[in-house]
Image (cartoon, rainbow, N blue to C red; front, top):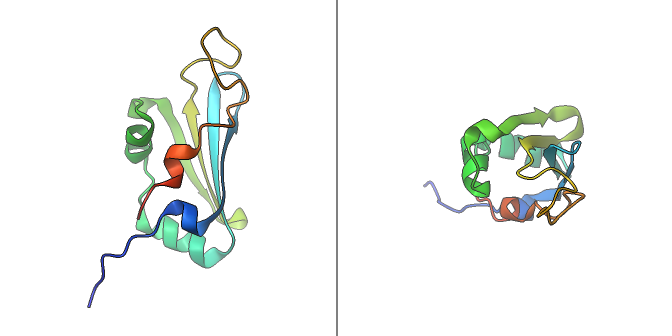
Length: 107
């Protein structure tokens, strides 16, 4: 019997964070405590460029890369920063407060 129980990313990831990747890009890191959790997430193929773009209300073309990095049990996403770091109207100069939408991602 197959169940439809979903897992929230925040419940399985050890670290979910965002940060600057230079003044014109943001990087999101998702790190897992163990290979089993990492493999489960990657195998679900839930975090694609289109899914990330939808979560953040941006065009898919603004998502530069979604990269799984098995040696670190991590997934990295890099996007074009909507407003460059430190520019007028920008509210998060370090890019450290942008990870929230990822926390509720279910798979």
